[in-house]
Amino acid sequence: MDEALFLGSNSLSSIAAAAAIQSASVPDEHIVAVFFSVAWLEASLNEIIHLLLRPERIADSPQYNRVAIAARAAKLDGRTASLDLKLQVLCAAATDDSLALGQAPWQHLTLLLDLRNAIVHLRPERVKVRRGQDDEPSSLVTDQDQANDIIKRLLSAGALDSFPQGYMVPILTAAQRPTIGRWSYATVYRVLEQVAEWLPSWREHIIAVHRSPEVLRPAV
Image 1: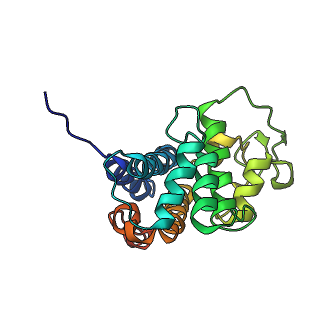
Image 2 (image 1 turned 30 degrees about the vertical axis):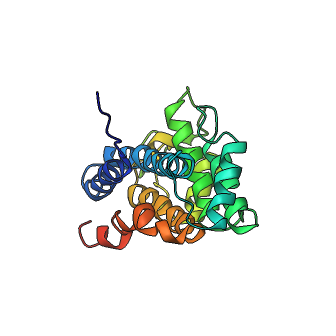
């Protein structure tokens, strides 16, 4: 029986984009955008690694051969290879340099992964609160300077446009705030733009098939 190869990263990016658009009116869609943006990134990297390591691959250049050798040596096609490892190895092999983890988009990606992981592995969260005042809508209130570290980082990165005033604010509530969905999608798109710069002849497959974040803005 014949086999056909299915590459699904574009399907995942479409779901992430749709969620980012719908999040303007449906807060739960921000969380959908977080999940599917990360899934889209991982699927894209897995597709790149598959293309690099396929037996019938025709060498594009010495650079691509070098990246393929590094990917095989690091066992990037294994199920235990982390997303961070895949990016670190691909970057080093393609550019002879390491990721600038303290700069965008890598700093934003680290934050996005931390947010996704906090939600996926959600546990009872101890939220610092005080008694709400008469003019505040909630009886328990979190002040911004007492918020969870991830929430503070989201604010600092511009992923959150503002801190909810007068409410208790756990991570899950913060993740449903305006701009989170679009920021999640845009973060992954910017990461893949960087990956496409490492492997320019594959740019069309890596990034050109996906919708630019700017396309989402008028709709939301």
